[in-house]
Structure formats: structure tokens, C-alpha cells
Image 1 (cartoon, rainbow, N blue to C red):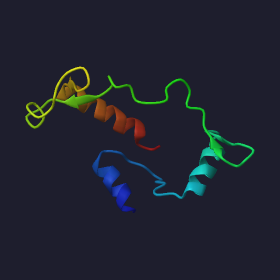
Image 2: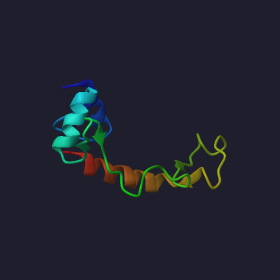
Image 3: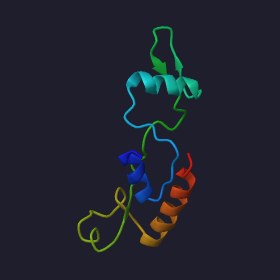
Image 4: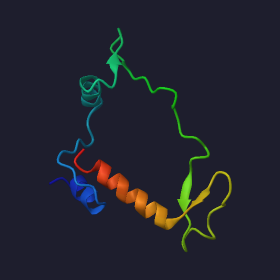
Length: 100
């Protein structure tokens, strides 16, 4: 078992296969094989990202707890997130990623 697989298990994510630190060539081959991109006539990888091309500045949520309460500049950019909601979201994401 790779160290990264152990790390993922400790985070609650159970995976059967990990592709870790692949070369650019391998990443390109997999992207094309999975239909997530194509090569142009010069051999460069082209990927359509759709209308969502970056992170929205107002999508930054930080759990407010004893560590962050007085250290974060809370406001429109650093939005407080409830710890209980984070735990539920974390569990949901781990379930989704397990087995992928």
C-alpha cells in the first residue's frame, strides 16, 4: 500500500487505485482516454472547462473555532462556516470519494 493510500484512509477515503505523481504524458493519456480532453493538431491537450473557470472570491469558507475565531479577518471574503456543517459535508465528500 502506498503512503498516499494510507493518508487517504486516515482521512476517511477508501480507494482501490491511486494514480499519484503521474508524468505529464501519463496525465495527458488518461485525460484523452477518459474523454475529458483531446489533443489539438499540434499535440497539445485541450480541455473545455465550461463556464466555471475559476474559484469565486465569495466561495471561501473557514470553520470558525477556537483556533480561527480571533485570527481570521471575517467578512465577505473569509466567511465563517459552522463546525457541525463542516463535519457533515466532510463525511458526505469522503463517502462520495471512497471507491473512486
